[in-house]
Amino acid sequence: MSIPQARTAPAPVALRPASDAPAASRARSLAPLRAWLWVVAGCIFAMVVVGGATRLTQSGLSITEWKPVMGALPPLGEAAWAAEFDRYKQIPQYALLNPDMTLSGFKSIYYWEWAHRLLGRIVGSLVLLPLAFFWLTGRLTPALKPRLVGLFLLGGVQGVIGWFMVKSGLSARTDVSQYFLALHLVTASLAFVWAIWLAEGLRRAPAGRQTPALDRLRRTATALVWLVLLQIGLGAFVAGLHAGLVYNTWPLMDGHLVPPLADLARQSPSWSNLFENVTTVQFDHRTVAYAVLILALFHAADAWSGAPRTGVSRRAGLLVAAVLMQAAIGITTLLLVVPLWAALLHQGFAMVVLATAVLHRRRLSAPALRVVRASAGA
Image 1 (cartoon, rainbow, N blue to C red):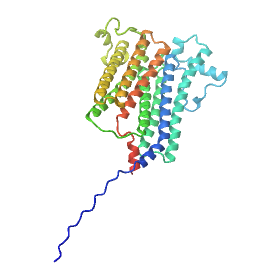
Image 2 (tube, rainbow, N blue to C red):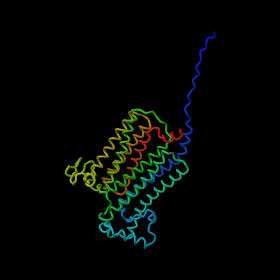
Image 3 (cartoon, rainbow, N blue to C red):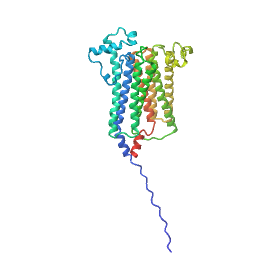
Image 4 (cartoon, helix red, strand yellow):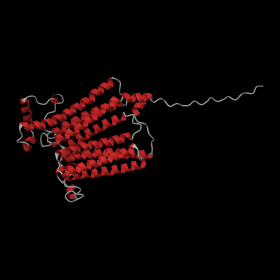
């Protein structure tokens, strides 16, 4: 009788990690898309700065018609310039503010607005044409396609808002509505954020280890992005109401750290004080600036404690430095009663702060290349 021999178990097979080569190849193929999106973000930044110069030089109402295609060229010849100047003479801004303006003076404000609109056309083309190329050549993942289409549509909406903003100042006002101005600037800022977010989403990065500290940092970094966007919107109301030309002291406003309630709530209905009362609008802008700085300092301290000597803590520190610099520029602009150079620097550096906050928040997401890895695995 034979004794059955024990069956030996097969030797365990070592599990080899899946090759990362497809993901690396995919990341390299997406490098041109990332560069393109950074160029788009840079052009949006330039458009915001030129838009600020257009507003500060009171040039925004110099072009009284919206011609998305034919308006790409400035007037050609003296007759065309004279006709354009005649149209400008029909609006209240000319009659009430610039009745002595010459054709030469008109040309100077016209070119600011024309440059702003031309940049808008360039940004639109810079999004649409490469998007079509990348789409048709199969370089876009399914996850990227709707996101990039959304970026293009957001830019289109921003352009439409810009025209309604101009239109608001052509009949009964000498400047544009602060409501449309704020909406116009915030929409441009959202497009700027979206371009940076998508560009950084194509950056190849390790997944990293998730910890409760990182989850908390991610939440406060998100809050910082939204708070900076709110502050940019409030800045647009300050600009639209010329509220920076009053209370040109700091940290007090007419001798008060907090203005009297009678000044903050002088208008009726009460909600209108938030958007139409120069005292309240400037006070809100100052208050949110303090909130941004306090949250940035708290976030940086948390990062230095929870993730010391890492990219997270270094970026958090850089964000604090950017917020402090922006606060110093804002105070200088106020104390000097809003000179053109300081106001432009303040508006431009606000976008730098926003970009720093968005980059920091995006890099707290792990992995940054989710859509690439998913596609490669598929």
